[in-house]
Image (cartoon, rainbow, N blue to C red):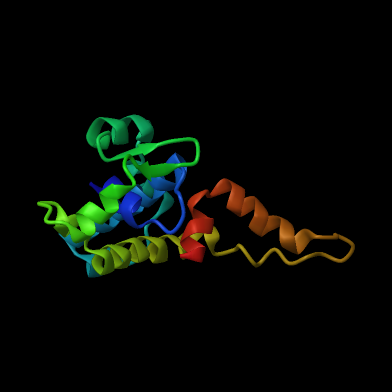
Length: 156
């Protein structure tokens, strides 16, 4: 049902890759809460995140939620635009999934957890060398291409 929550409250359309990363971060967080967040530390490693990535996220979302959300070229979207109104204001059995403030908090927690991951720590340390034009801009742009969810998490 995480796909439904993202579909309902995402700030901009998430690609399948972005959603896969967001879901993996959320699953890693949940696994830590079950063990003990304080004992594990706060940072999720790339290896830990990889264990939660879905090799075919589009098929998984289609199998679990095809009546509610789907991936199109633009990314994750609700099947019916009226679904958000129904789930957030109607008398729905699934209204607990559509609690906007709580869901935004959960999604923000995923974004905040993703941003300080170890592979972003040296993002700004590659300062332009003398004579190397544009070097200070290249590394962040490379990271944005390599880590798809980075842009979304940073903005929201």
